Length: 222
Image (cartoon, rainbow, N blue to C red; front, side, top):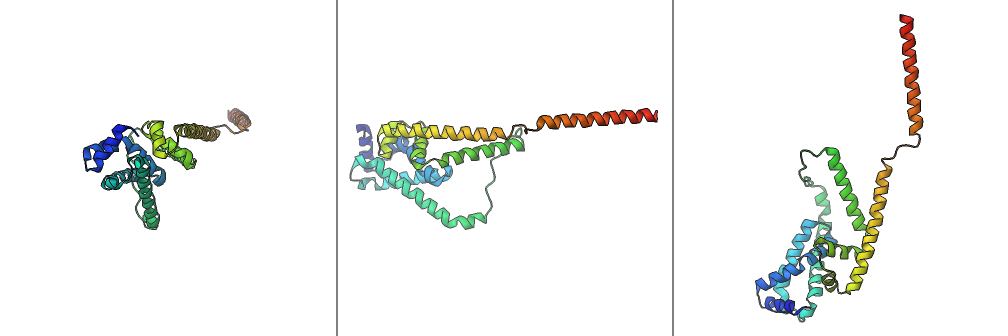
């Protein structure tokens, strides 16, 4: 841990809110990503991150080792996120009976079809990201939410920087493979049916027959 950070933590432990504000700035996305991975709700993750820092500031004076701060903070965030999820599971039946939140207002130029397509795409991407193991998904969240350096992510996770880089590489590879498969599946929906040419020819023949018949009828009437 850098000496500057240790000094900030020591001042924070004595009640210096300004120093702790700098700690919050350094760890905000790390804590937010930890919460987001568990609760899968950005708004809830923000609230949990805020509660985590408030609790940490109050309890920092009792932390025995400054060096343990990253893992200690991670544990606080994890426990709060798990508690939130447990409470949501308990309230789920009540929420199901309630009114669903309205979707964000769409641009006047955006058609209903475009909105549905965009919503379906976002749902697919979220499903792909969620399908990754925690081991791979969490480093991706940490390092791509706000370009958190791999060294900072490693320190927060309690693993080597090399391990973080390896997980990022593996996670990106799996994401790419699954997104490509999703794209291929989507493009399949736009492919013409195998008998498209035959249908066209049959349609042309029917049209020609109808046209010939109509011409004959006109000749007879004339």
